[in-house]
Amino acid sequence: EIVLTQSPATLSLSPGERATLSCRASQSVSSYLAWYQQKPGQAPRLLIYDASNRATGIPARFSGSGSGTDFTLTISSLEPEDFAVYYCQQRSNWPPEVTFGPGTKVDIK
Amino acid sequence: EVQLVQSGAEVKKPGESLKISCKGSGYSFTSYWIGWVRQMPGKGLEWMGIIYPGDSDTRYSPSFQGQVTISADKSISTAYLQWSSLKASDTAMYYCARLGRLSLDYWGQGTLVTVSS
Image (cartoon, rainbow over all chains, first blue to last red; front, side, top):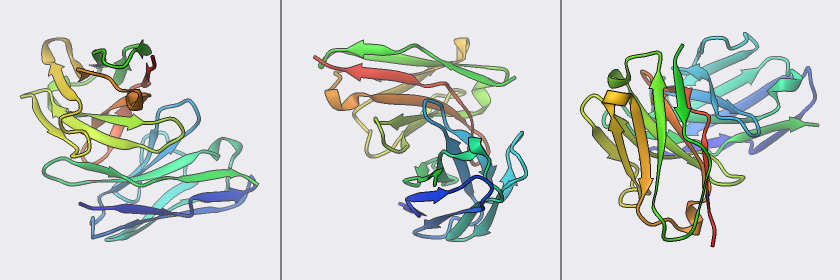
């Protein structure tokens, strides 16, 4: 079973600052990693798939990188609406099992 | 437009049964896996299991095997999550989500289940 670890658990930043979130897998997941954003009272929203591809409608300030076991989600300049919890996720090809990381909370400093 | 619409909030007593639903529209319901995700109050996302409505192939996370039943009725484009005997620890928000190629690309709005005596 692949385990995902996210760091830091909490990131305290100001609007306009750059956010760098990390996700590490216990074994290689190739580029099969996604990132989600969840705001209070809302369902998660897909941001990034296949490690570096933005989902439909996602602003360009969100970018993903990495492959193998180490991945990064970068928010180039935080907007007020970006303060939320971010989860990484991987999926095995077969059987179709999904694993989530524990999440990183980005809050206002 | 792809949509997953879940059934409304439920308040139940321990020991009661429950079945919640997730209705898909705007795409071929039988061609994509539908997964269920639990989020306990103030906690992260937990993968429960998944079903392929085309043939009802169902897979469970080991943590949820035997605890819940996932099913689907492709004639009405609806997936289900059910419990035969609820516990207080089942209190959580439950989400359904469509599994795209390698990610959960569309999510339901969530169903809050509260189990309390």
